[in-house]
Amino acid sequence: MIVHGAGRIANIKNLNLEKGNVKSSSNGILVNDFLQSVSNPDVYVAGDVVASKNPNATPKAGFEGELVASNLLSGNTVKAKYDEIPRVVFTIPALASVGKNEMELKKGGFNFRVNYQDTSNGYTSKRMCETCSGFKVLIDNETDKILGAHLIGPHAEEVINIFSLAIKLGLTTSDLRNSTLYSYPTSSSDIPYMLN
Image (cartoon, rainbow, N blue to C red; front, side, top):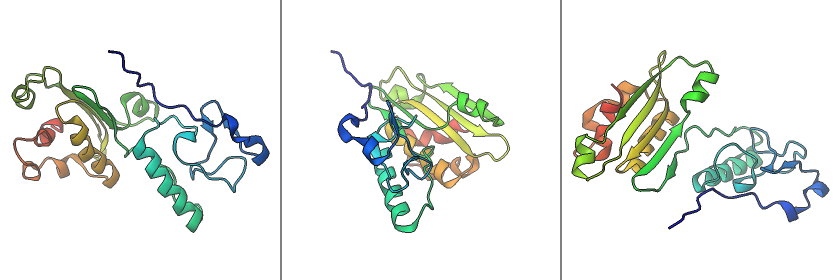
């Protein structure tokens, strides 16, 4: 079986954007941080047609739709921040990510540490007969906040949501280490071990 999962391409060729003075690239419509056209301030854009380095996904489009509505009604007050939106590849096992990766953090000059472990031999993986699992959590050394999380394994598509919430709310590792926050034995009950 072959599965094509390369994503979607912005379908803007027939929109006649030049007439509306709306600049675009092969990647989509060019926007500022408020999702406003860089060439026509009367135009706001959301979803798959936004020229963005971020993957086109349903949560991103929903987030952008809400952001555009807010900026249209209240003026440009909300900027697009994509770090807290989780990304998931629904393979077996699932692969999930949220926040920044190591390369982005190094380029940004962050002082961070990497918690990494292959958990294929761990209890959660063994009880679910999963032979491929692991995590990488990126943590700010100065604030102890979660900067990114990258998971593969059982229920990664659900566990990533906790890391997404941590990034959005600025939670620290000590906020998430309390084992009483998680029902046991769930995949999320492994989070405290990912933060040591």
